[in-house]
Image: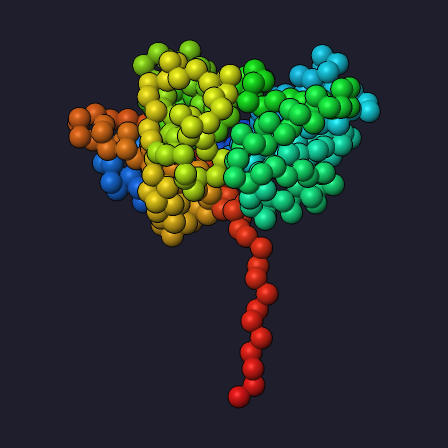
Amino acid sequence: MTLALDPVRRARLRVAERITDLIGDTPIVRLPAFERETPGVELWAKCEFLNPGGSVKDRAASQMIRDAIRTGLLGPGKTIIDSTSGNTGVAYALIGGALGYPVTLVMPGNVSWARRKITEAFGTKLVFSDPMEGSDGAIRLCRQMVEDNPGAYFYPDQYSNLGNPLAHYNTTGREIWEQTEGRVTHFVTGIGTTGTVMGTGRRLKEYRRDIEVWAVEPADALHGLEGLKHMESSMVPPIYHPEELDGVLPMDTDEAWDVSERLAKEEGLLVGHSSGASLAGGLRIAKRLVAAHKPGVVVTLFPDRAERYFEAPMPPKPVRAP
């Protein structure tokens, strides 16, 4: 018996030999509730939370680990180690588990409870740096651990590894171009390691030079946008080249959080605050186009879902009988 499948359904069916084969090829979704504010300008979001590890970081982690295995930097007996605020760590943990490599992660002490529990579930060893030093403190501690234990670790160093932006050049940029059928006019996303915006932007500008690429960063050093970096007050990743961008949009925490809440209530998308920041930046660009009476197709990217930011439940208070 031959099954006759609808072409659309056939395109959605995916069969994989292992979980890592499901990284990438995430869908994009239109945002009609927000488009009411931007008549004539389309708003789309790439759903990176549908990667198997639950975030955009699956792409870079996969590229860096595959490159290391191919070149011999990662082999039997070595442990994968890196600093992370959470999402890349989950990606390392998933891929390490699938490929048979132990993983050690260095995280700021204030990383969310949910990310701790997810990475621990994979059997990952966690080391915590001073929470007051943020992601930069985790980077410094990780480098010290590698220096103190020569030969024990493979250290991808996501902030410096060219495989990070290459992953998005090879996949994310190509997918956005194909999914919009070449109509994309603007790409807007938040910056942490900066690999996503750099790699995706390079690929899109190769397709068409007039596509604008914008980064979104926290407006100040003391912000509440976990995973994003305020560059002026941070260790700037060597892979970051702002001269290749069309601009950087400073984002207030409250504005990003408000957009995140609207996404859940108005679009049914329960995403993290970095997603809210990315869309808030995309909205600014879209409204500029409306004011200039220009059409556009603005694509942003949602790195993860809101569950990554949930904190540990508090035990219920005892209720005394009257």
